[in-house]
Length: 74
Image (cartoon, rainbow, N blue to C red; front, side, top):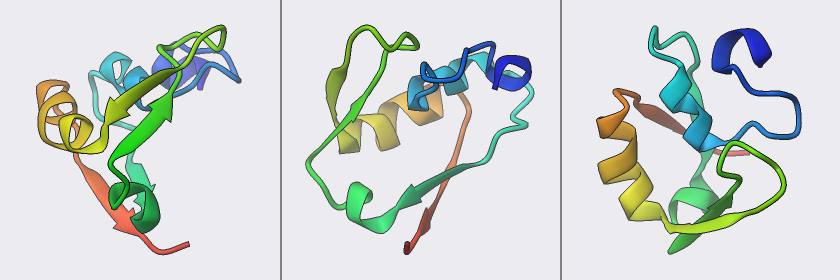
């Protein structure tokens, strides 16, 4: 993760994709998470957490950082 996202283990989150300017990381999201109103993540450090609207992440954040996602059933 350090090489691909410039983040240390334990600090990796969906927001870390902004560091993946070459789009080498593929984002997989569990269907149950996609169906939730909110998701939680670290702001690239594991000393705090954030609650974001799932639709904002999928429809605003990911397009802004030029990443897509694939829904999976776990």
